[in-house]
Image (cartoon, rainbow, N blue to C red; front, top):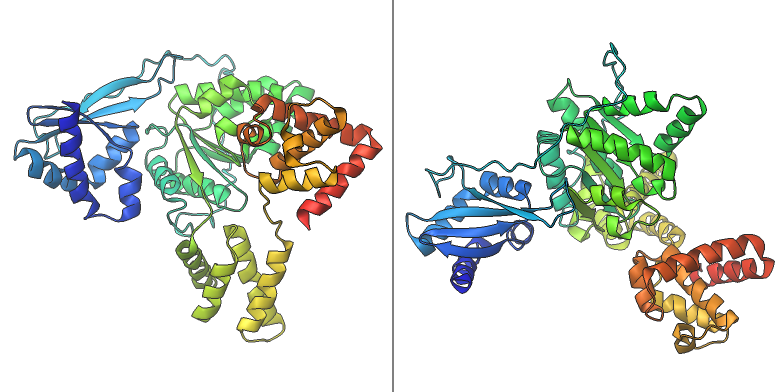
Length: 475
């Protein structure tokens, strides 16, 4: 039965692939799994309710044509939605959803609502008679969806952001976590979602806050004995956007209070949006109960933009600034600035400033001069392998000795330094670093990093090791 479902679905995919863009196919059809065929009904498994809703809204006609080709005019499609039960530690459960009435694949079908048993959480911090005060959103209106250029590197995150903006608290993307490296647009996208929500739902209370400011507010509330008021204030928010949530790392008091705020908002159908420079699985010193909640919704990664997206970003900024620039110059910038969006825009700002202040034309020579400065000032990313070679050479060791099981003090310290620099200078997870440096686990890497931090503060000779190696690895 499974083989039949697989073969039918593969034939459908062949047709679908020829009729949509490759990235759309990769995003919306590759994750689907065929489950079974029962008569003229094909059951497919999709990863979330949002996924099902997106297919129904955007691709149902295409799905109908593809399925009718295989199963005839009476073909029906049944969705098997897999999602993690947010209210227990049990394994993910399945809810079968026949296509809705508007779906031509199943005109008689009735949608089975996807529900999770919720227990009503009474807010112990409600102050009787308090009125909902006007709260400034702290959003930047310039960070909107129009100025956030879509590409292969961000399509899933942007699509999820649009879905949340259209239906805050009403999709399975709650919380929505946006993660990725520096300058890739996390803050921009988070603001864009908030701006769109405020435009569509003016009565909703939307608040953007950087995690550092949230931490500071909490500390001040403890000092002034107003912790309950602090919590109650955040429990009144309809859409809470927390930027750079990784800075909660190690802040147990703040994590505890955020845990309670998060629970209240989520269980009352409010939307939570968080950004981070790393995926939940790679976060350290964050309580497990909080990490598990980060995984309830969707974690969408922003990756480094490809060449075509970089060109589009540059052209969009030039258009918004009312500046004309020769295509060859735009092309040169896009080909040479590859790390992130912030640097792309930084080069443009420098170009425009140089040209206007010095009354110069935009030339390729000027472009090369400015781009060279940016490239030189950008820290080159080194690999874990390079780091091991540099550290081993510095201590007159070979890499095999560095990775060995020996507990000799100078070799252990060299190994710990390699782990420390790998964590600081690469995007690799702790587990990946440990695996590559002598097949250690992530806890060993975390211990090594803490040891290096402590010895750097207390041991003058060790501090010199760190300074010397920093120079060797960055210059």
